[in-house]
Image (cartoon, rainbow, N blue to C red; front, side):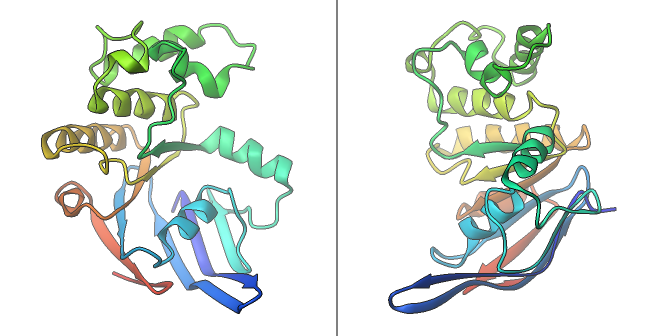
Length: 220
């Protein structure tokens, strides 16, 4: 059963110049443990689709299903809850807080949780991504690849079912990008689905399949 699915998703934006249809009937599904890349030129609708898959936006038409449950019309509060519970995000710009250490950055999504052991979990995740010797370093003391590994660890702190990555290798050299893609491959071995929106052709060497999005239409 797919962990995340869209059925006939259409997204329209209204402006003074008229109606722009960014997505035109997108059917997409990803299974647990699958690594999928979404490729396409700028303006093809990739970011729009990522926002809908991440429950950051809602479609104009169609349905979004999470673990076979229709989450299309949830309230903002429920969408936030489901996002927090199920989805991790990794971004091209890392978005690490400069005054916090690597461990503290990883714990940010759970800073308001009252559970004990969150820091220990963060340290375990950083060790898992090969940063056991950088846990107490701040972002200015880390390389680009190390920052992205911190971001991957942060995306896993809530034990998500899906990780959404937006141009995760875009700011990295080829060798470092390969290391990051290997990290995503390891993530899928634990049953986490990974979706990478990217222009980077090297991603295709690591994914289970690639889909293309051109002018709001998806092809396989």
